[in-house]
Amino acid sequence: MSATAKGLILLCRPGFEPECSAEADVLAKRAGISGKPRTETNSGCVHYVFDEIFDWKLAQDATPFHALVFARQRSVWVERLSDLPTEDRATPLIEAIEALGVQIGRIEAETADTNEAKTLGGFLKRFIPHIERALSARRILRNKADLPTLHLYFKDSSQIDLGLSDPGNASPWPMGIARLRMPRNAPSRSTLKLAEAFDALMTEDERVQSLRAGLYAVDLGAAPGGWSFQFAERGLHVFAVDNGPLADALIQTGMVEHVKADGFNWRAPRKQVEWLVCDMVEQPGRIAQLVADWVATGRCKRAIFNLKLPMKKRFDELKRCRQLIDSRFKVHGDSYVLRIRQLYHDREEVTAYLAKIHPHTLPSDKQSGR
Ligand SMILES: C[S@@+](CC[C@H](N)C(=O)[O-])C[C@H]1O[C@@H](n2cnc3c(N)ncnc32)[C@H](O)[C@@H]1O
Image (tube, rainbow, N blue to C red):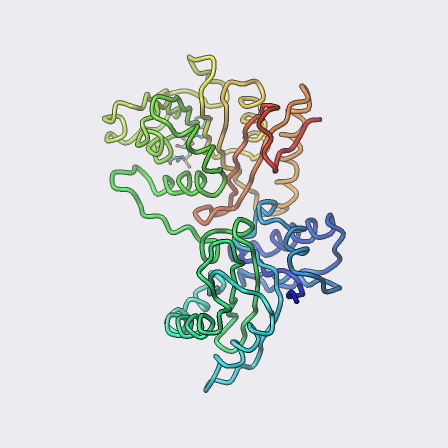
């Protein structure tokens, strides 16, 4: 017996429910699944409700996590428990989990990222270990890394949605929130954005290949230097392009050359660098074109960049940026990988990773100029 899917549970940055709903709808329809998004403004959560129920693994594989931009976390929704009695919420929950007939490797307790939901923190700290012990005793919770994760989404303490995801097909962080420590000496908090992007958008192999001492990086819109700092810390040489001032401590590392120039026109003094990163505050379409040009012409091997989205039609704007990138690569029929995500450290923006793919190394998420 295997659990059946009612829909998807998607967590997002509060305020981005329309974009999260729209992309879930596009993804589901593309996979031939009919359904509808249900959400409330600023709730930080979208339920995508399927019109028919079917096997949870099929639902998961048809809606891969890596294809979503605005969902910080997504699990396949398999059950809802409402009106749980205050005196004993645990028994009905344990019975419902047992009835799923699925062995699990771990439990993630989730809420929306709202102030109201945060008040559940104390209750969850006491409640979840109790549930874990009960499920371990029943041999439903096993200490095995390849078993599915059970997501318990608490709307409040009386309503819980049960979700499932396989490891590798969901965010590895609870609620998709990367809790990173601010490094000492970093020139700006923005440094965390690039640190999160390395983790969220790249594979381990890609990080090992590209974040090595001695390689070169270009940072467009670098000041005061939070992104350059991430490279300097790892021993990469950085051309930091910005008319604004860089932090003294960063210059003193000896790894960063400050270039006072316009990032749209400047050319690196080397034929190819490993990295281009770009955090210039500019229209997203201009940034997408600029970065696509660097990667497509081989001036850099890979890029991470921010697209600052407009207040309205954010989903459409993102689609337009994807099309601009696609048409730049189509010119030579090259293949590329493009991964986009609204990171925890992003606000009104999304962060993207773009790299050209050489024919002998085709990752599963490749896009192609055919
Ligand atoms: C959000 S800040 C960058 C923060 C930086 N990533 C950090 O971690 O400290 C944007 C920067 O882009 C720079 N900028 C905007 N337009 C630019 C352009 N055309 N050329 C170079 N820099 C530009 C601004 O001067 C500003 O310092």
